[in-house]
Length: 329
Ligand code: SD4
Image (cartoon, rainbow, N blue to C red; front, side, top):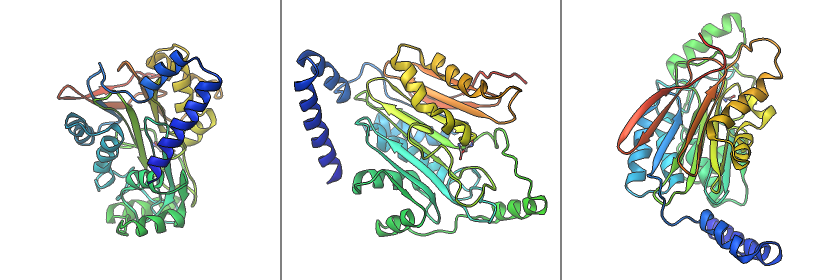
């Protein structure tokens, strides 16, 4: 119901704009890009960190003709229910009071987006963000409101704190020393970008946030423009690492805007990392990493510290790549 409304609004408002401001030929071109029909780029999925199962899932969905948004949500759902992954979904590290609170967002090729912040008891928060986008008049639902909406949609409440995460939290409590780690187990926040058979781009980003954060703390991952940004006429970017620093520079939006100005995805990721670095005199003791794609299928990735990886599915092959970083080992 909502997507239809939004789409027809988009069509109407764009037609209005084109009549007033844009020559019809230009409108025709931009409309073609917004609603691609067939791409010259073969479908692919790419995600932060070492997540081959998640990327395979998305890649196979894309090969079957699924759209980029659904493929990205399906892909990240694997890590959301992976109990061994302590940075995403069920099994994620809790806040300092022992509550697992999850953040996620999605963005599609129309520029629609949905986001959920600090939600408890719901594992598949990227799907929930998609439901917020598709079934409500809002973009963001937070906390208990998000949880209640999830329950109303048939999501089952679950205890997200596993025995292992509880034990780790209890031993953390002994010193209660808060210092975000660099590269947690090589599969931190999962940010996934997909390009479907039509050449349309979408993304999803999902996380349990920083381990032992303050209650109520929200990072960059569910913040559109910071943790994720998609513009179907340009490209898309997604972030991982210390969210506070990504928010301050609106990292993913920045990367897409740099690509719009003609920079490659790689140069754009490097510039976004530089914008963070110039605020820190010394070698910063935190990690931030970005991956980016453009509409021509080019890829970029860069991080502050070594150890950041990404996983890509393309043409029936899944590969894990080590990302260049400012500082070396
Ligand atoms: C956050 N960006 O909540 C997330 C955490 C993360 O790698 O990505 N860790 O700030």
